[in-house]
Image 1 (spheres, rainbow, N blue to C red):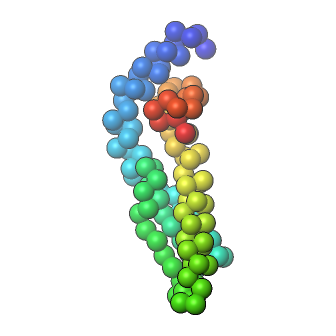
Image 2 (image 1 turned 60 degrees about the horizontal axis):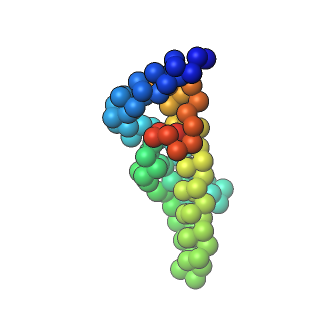
Length: 106
């Protein structure tokens, strides 16, 4: 691709960033841990939308394990969300892969 065309595409992406940011708030990815005992859903801004904890995972004598399962489920959800966002940003950029650090580049 011509560097000038690429620059124009990046400017178009910046111009549409507000619209894109609103759209990604509607995206969802679910992560799990402990054999699905813990499930965390995040949106496209990596905010936790919901957390589900199977009562079997709740042992007051082992709070540390529950904390680790929650962290692992959240991390799993974020890992699943990143490629979704990358794909959306590539579509918005007309197929140009955005560099790391560019607003919206993940």
